[in-house]
Length: 116
Image 1 (cartoon, rainbow, N blue to C red):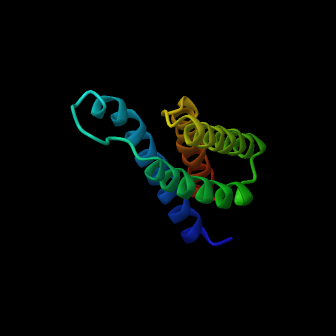
Image 2 (cartoon, rainbow, N blue to C red):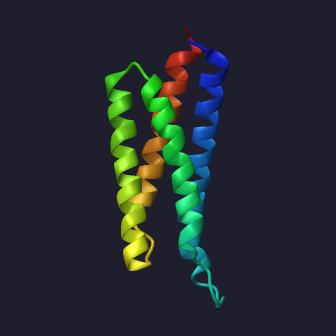
């Protein structure tokens, strides 16, 4: 098992999901400003897509069933949130919960492989 690629994937996964979560948390504050267009679905889709791609890669390499389950639930929440946002054009809570779950899953996955 290549430890270097595992840790870089998890580190980038935590960074990507964290960036997505920061975007989701800051968006409601930006909507209070009198700006013309403060929300773009494609930004959410790109951030969510990169997070999902990295989560699938890490999920395949994880040996813990609980971490795999957390990855799967978080991916489904993120996908559901993206689909719901694409239909209603409103920020969905599934994006925030899915991103948080991915951060936790990547962190646990990283810690379990760090000591091997």
